[in-house]
Length: 412
Image (cartoon, rainbow, N blue to C red):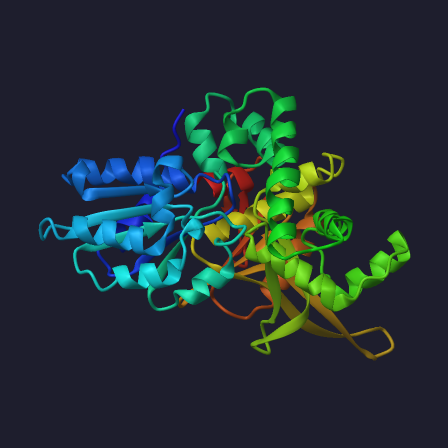
């Protein structure tokens, strides 16, 4: 079974010949190399590009080890580019193994008939610092795990069975392709220990690996919950009887974010039109990794659905904040009371904005009113959606708020 990853192929196509380095980023084992060296290569061939104009370099291969030296790789690619004036497509895998790779890639930008694409492992390369390094000279193609829609399009099972698997095991391709559920869980736990955590620990020279793993578990237990380093430090003291400096916790969280394991959502005051710096919400890039981290003991559909909505909307190209609206009401004694209502997601893309409320179930009228209360207070005309796991048809409430089931939303 082959997942075509059409959204990402389209992004690569739209970036073709733009005189920038195309940097394919994302979790390890998310399929970056397959996207580039299989799917995108086939696209180029189908468009008439000759295979001898596609330069493939696998720096983790024994056969290509000589190209880990900057001079050898640059001279090799430059010599090929001089054979004729047609475009050559350079694909470099595990580019972090290349000496002085920043200088080499910048050098390629001065050769007019080169179109350059790179991937690497997040131990030394696929973190936010490389995107910063190439700002203005590179474009990032952020590859996410398989979406619910991508999996559904390849499956013969009903959507409810697929959903149940998806909220347990997530969307890493090698996990989705594995049919045995026990083995799925084993793969996820092996990846956590032997790949992701070890990458972070080795890259950042962390001495106390137990502390960072405990923090990772704590974040996993509290997806979608407002928190900050100070709160987490206090939790370590109260629950673990361990004292960790809040600045150390902040550094650990930054390591997780830089390695694409989690994302951070900041609160936004909708009426005041300003950001609230703390606390934040954190969401996992792959929900299967989150569940495996907790040994599948806390598979709460409510929080998991919220996390999956977050990932989906990020994949659609939106920036996401957590919305806050301050409401003032008078009580029976005439005293003015202040309360803060929350909108799960304020999603912005250019001038487009969508408000989304995640409500796993809305069994009665009171729950429906509760979920739409904050949305109705925004006083603007942007699209407002309540998503639910209840199997109901899409409909619009009297105040213009759309109610839709999660399956229809994710499947479009």
